[in-house]
Amino acid sequence: PAVLLLNGPNLNLLGHRDPAQYGTTSLADIERRVTELGAELGADVECAQSNHEGVLVEHVHRARDLDGVVVNPGAFAHYSIALRDAVDAVDTPCVEVHISNVYAREEFRHTSVTAPVMQGYIAGCGVTGYELGLRAVLARIAERRA
Ligand code: DQA
Image (cartoon, rainbow, N blue to C red):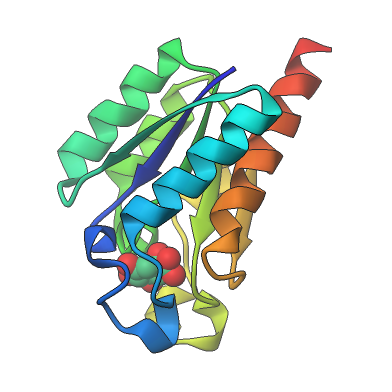
Protein backbone atom coordinates (compact mmCIF):
# COMPACT_ATOMS: atom_id res chain seq x y z
CA PRO A 1 0.00 0.00 0.00
CA ALA A 2 0.93 3.62 -0.62
CA VAL A 3 0.59 5.89 2.41
CA LEU A 4 1.02 9.64 2.71
CA LEU A 5 2.52 11.02 5.93
CA LEU A 6 1.23 14.57 6.03
CA ASN A 7 2.28 17.23 8.53
CA GLY A 8 0.67 20.63 8.92
CA PRO A 9 1.79 24.07 10.10
CA ASN A 10 4.84 24.57 12.32
CA LEU A 11 5.69 20.87 12.36
CA ASN A 12 8.71 21.63 10.16
CA LEU A 13 10.12 23.15 13.38
CA LEU A 14 9.96 19.87 15.32
CA GLY A 15 13.10 19.29 17.33
CA HIS A 16 13.42 23.00 18.07
CA ARG A 17 9.85 24.01 18.83
CA ASP A 18 8.67 23.68 22.46
CA PRO A 19 10.60 20.47 23.24
CA ALA A 20 8.65 20.04 26.51
CA GLN A 21 5.50 19.44 24.43
CA TYR A 22 6.91 17.96 21.26
CA GLY A 23 10.28 16.40 22.14
CA THR A 24 13.59 16.83 20.38
CA THR A 25 13.08 14.60 17.35
CA SER A 26 13.17 16.48 14.04
CA LEU A 27 10.55 16.06 11.32
CA ALA A 28 13.23 14.55 9.07
CA ASP A 29 13.88 11.90 11.75
CA ILE A 30 10.17 11.16 12.09
CA GLU A 31 9.80 10.86 8.33
CA ARG A 32 12.77 8.50 8.21
CA ARG A 33 11.41 6.32 11.02
CA VAL A 34 7.94 6.08 9.52
CA THR A 35 9.33 5.37 6.05
CA GLU A 36 11.54 2.59 7.49
CA LEU A 37 8.65 1.09 9.44
CA GLY A 38 6.60 1.26 6.24
CA ALA A 39 9.28 -0.67 4.36
CA GLU A 40 9.24 -3.33 7.10
CA LEU A 41 5.47 -3.59 6.90
CA GLY A 42 5.34 -3.57 3.10
CA ALA A 43 4.09 0.00 2.68
CA ASP A 44 5.44 2.79 0.51
CA VAL A 45 5.46 5.95 2.61
CA GLU A 46 5.56 9.34 0.97
CA CYS A 47 6.10 12.40 3.19
CA ALA A 48 4.87 15.98 2.87
CA GLN A 49 4.63 19.01 5.14
CA SER A 50 3.05 22.39 4.56
CA ASN A 51 2.27 25.49 6.55
CA HIS A 52 -0.56 26.36 4.14
CA GLU A 53 -4.13 25.18 4.53
CA GLY A 54 -4.86 25.01 0.79
CA VAL A 55 -1.72 23.01 0.07
CA LEU A 56 -2.74 20.50 2.76
CA VAL A 57 -6.22 20.30 1.20
CA GLU A 58 -4.62 19.53 -2.17
CA HIS A 59 -2.43 16.81 -0.65
CA VAL A 60 -5.56 15.20 0.76
CA HIS A 61 -7.21 15.37 -2.68
CA ARG A 62 -4.16 13.72 -4.20
CA ALA A 63 -4.52 10.95 -1.64
CA ARG A 64 -7.49 9.70 -3.69
CA ASP A 65 -4.84 7.84 -5.67
CA LEU A 66 -3.20 6.43 -2.53
CA ASP A 67 -4.32 3.84 0.03
CA GLY A 68 -4.07 5.79 3.27
CA VAL A 69 -3.02 8.98 5.03
CA VAL A 70 -1.44 9.62 8.42
CA VAL A 71 -1.94 13.29 9.16
CA ASN A 72 -0.95 15.67 11.91
CA PRO A 73 -3.02 18.73 10.99
CA GLY A 74 -1.32 20.82 13.71
CA ALA A 75 -3.49 23.76 14.76
CA PHE A 76 -5.71 23.28 11.67
CA ALA A 77 -7.26 20.33 13.52
CA HIS A 78 -8.91 22.84 15.81
CA TYR A 79 -10.60 25.02 13.18
CA SER A 80 -10.06 24.08 9.53
CA ILE A 81 -13.44 23.10 8.12
CA ALA A 82 -11.74 23.07 4.69
CA LEU A 83 -9.32 20.35 5.76
CA ARG A 84 -12.15 18.41 7.40
CA ASP A 85 -14.24 18.63 4.22
CA ALA A 86 -11.27 17.44 2.14
CA VAL A 87 -10.82 14.35 4.32
CA ASP A 88 -14.56 13.77 4.22
CA ALA A 89 -14.59 14.08 0.42
CA VAL A 90 -12.00 11.39 -0.23
CA ASP A 91 -12.58 7.71 0.25
CA THR A 92 -9.01 7.09 1.43
CA PRO A 93 -8.74 6.19 5.13
CA CYS A 94 -7.03 8.93 7.17
CA VAL A 95 -5.71 8.68 10.73
CA GLU A 96 -5.09 11.83 12.79
CA VAL A 97 -2.02 12.11 14.98
CA HIS A 98 -1.11 14.68 17.62
CA ILE A 99 2.24 14.39 19.34
CA SER A 100 1.13 16.11 22.54
CA ASN A 101 -1.83 15.23 24.73
CA VAL A 102 -4.04 18.03 23.46
CA TYR A 103 -6.59 17.27 26.22
CA ALA A 104 -4.03 18.15 28.89
CA ARG A 105 -3.43 21.54 27.27
CA GLU A 106 -5.38 24.74 26.54
CA GLU A 107 -9.12 24.40 26.10
CA PHE A 108 -8.95 25.48 22.42
CA ARG A 109 -6.93 22.34 21.70
CA HIS A 110 -9.63 20.06 23.09
CA THR A 111 -11.74 20.37 19.96
CA SER A 112 -10.79 18.69 16.71
CA VAL A 113 -13.06 19.54 13.79
CA THR A 114 -11.17 17.01 11.67
CA ALA A 115 -11.36 14.02 14.04
CA PRO A 116 -15.00 13.07 13.25
CA VAL A 117 -14.13 12.30 9.61
CA MET A 118 -10.99 10.30 10.44
CA GLN A 119 -10.71 6.52 10.66
CA GLY A 120 -8.69 6.86 13.82
CA TYR A 121 -7.20 9.36 16.24
CA ILE A 122 -4.00 9.23 18.30
CA ALA A 123 -2.84 11.91 20.74
CA GLY A 124 -0.36 12.18 23.57
CA CYS A 125 1.94 9.31 22.55
CA GLY A 126 4.78 11.60 21.51
CA VAL A 127 6.40 11.03 18.13
CA THR A 128 5.68 7.29 18.54
CA GLY A 129 2.13 8.34 17.61
CA TYR A 130 3.23 8.56 13.97
CA GLU A 131 4.36 4.92 13.98
CA LEU A 132 1.10 3.93 15.70
CA GLY A 133 -0.73 5.97 13.07
CA LEU A 134 0.97 4.08 10.27
CA ARG A 135 0.10 0.73 11.86
CA ALA A 136 -3.49 1.88 12.35
CA VAL A 137 -3.96 3.08 8.78
CA LEU A 138 -2.43 -0.15 7.43
CA ALA A 139 -4.90 -2.14 9.54
CA ARG A 140 -7.76 -0.05 8.07
CA ILE A 141 -6.46 -0.66 4.56
CA ALA A 142 -6.23 -4.42 5.21
CA GLU A 143 -9.82 -4.45 6.58
CA ARG A 144 -11.08 -2.75 3.44
CA ARG A 145 -9.32 -5.28 1.24
CA ALA A 146 -10.62 -8.27 3.21
C1 DQA B 1 -0.20 19.31 17.60
C2 DQA B 1 -1.17 19.91 18.63
C3 DQA B 1 -1.78 21.21 18.10
O1 DQA B 1 -2.65 21.76 19.08
C4 DQA B 1 -0.70 22.22 17.79
O2 DQA B 1 -1.27 23.38 17.22
C5 DQA B 1 0.36 21.66 16.91
C6 DQA B 1 0.87 20.32 17.20
C7 DQA B 1 0.51 18.06 18.16
O3 DQA B 1 1.08 17.33 17.37
O4 DQA B 1 0.51 17.83 19.39
O5 DQA B 1 0.86 22.32 16.01
O6 DQA B 1 -0.92 18.92 16.45
